[in-house]
Image (cartoon, rainbow, N blue to C red):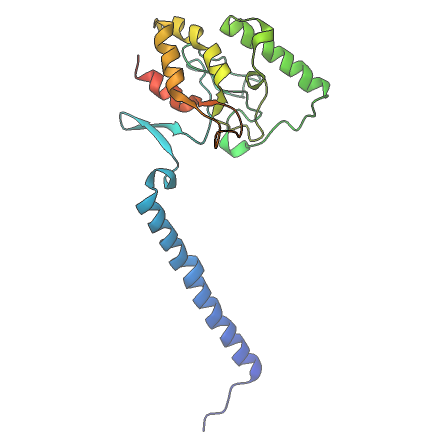
Length: 209
């Protein structure tokens, strides 16, 4: 007759079997099932909502990015990269649109550093777009909480139309129509504001030369 195992050994074997079973279910079978459903039913979202042009990935509809002059890079030199007038510009980013450095500046609304930064941005955007400082929308001078927001207000997008059209040699009406085609309405018709995804807008703009 086989001698029964000590209770402590039986408990450890039971725990080991449970570990193996749950590892297979939650670590292998469940991820495979979720991945299969996602790839089958929502392949675009499951693969990062990527924007492609001529087979090349330009970015994601979920992540904002810099549209700076060629050769300009965020950080490094200690100054912000100079924006390219031929592209619609996103709102500022505290992390330089680095997806590994998502976050805000954490400066309060009365912080003198933030106040000076906002005023400097307002003056720079006004000069860049050829408008009065008082007409510059708030999202043009303030960063989002994540620093990766790909959206700007419809007002800020329309403000940039003449500058983009001039830089590209296009008629303003063509560029304005492109913006209008990319304006997204409020969520459920009443949440938030009308907005434009800058990455998608610039991808469409690239097709106009």
